[in-house]
Amino acid sequence: MGSPIINANVDFTYAIANTLFSSSTSEGRTGSATYTGPDRIWVFVDAETNLFSQIQPPLTTVEDGADVPTPVGMRKVEVVAEDDPVVISIIREYEVTYADTTTTDETLPDGSTCTYNNVAELSETYEMQRLSHDGTSWDLGALDEPFVTWDDIIDSRNGALTASDGKISPDMPESISAPWVAYRTALRDLPATFKHGEADEIEAWKVNMPDHPED
Image (cartoon, rainbow, N blue to C red; front, side, top):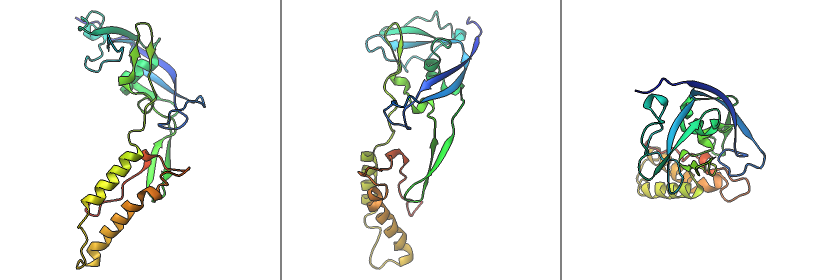
């Protein structure tokens, strides 16, 4: 039978990139948060790669985490909140309260609005599957990458153009054809609209595809 959970309340800071989803930390920016949850958990890492395993769920004292047998090919690691608050918070982010997260509403060149955090949260900075433990200490891995690139945007744009081929015919009433003409024009103009390839290019993750006429 497991032991009751002892809760910890730990304030901590964590390194974030200069801007959301960038790879540089040269400005030394940090975020602040509080972890409130089990004071320790037991997790498993791959014995060969040292990477955090998402196959075996983290265990608490209630689940007898310290005594649960370690599967073949894994190593069990105890994560103590006081010692590794960032690691336990990445794994249990739902028990994290952020101290200084505010949002920005940015108006984009097409008139749409992108809302994002000024101070990145943990899940916007680190990926759980990149956590690794070498038997002594944790490595948080590379910073989180953008979830979409300009190559993805261009591929989606090209697919949308192909899918809308044949939607306009010469005998079609203008009231029906006009939205399709505007849509296809916006698709063709999308890279230029968002300054793709220019010094002030809009980040791909901020870009919205044009509204589909049938939506």
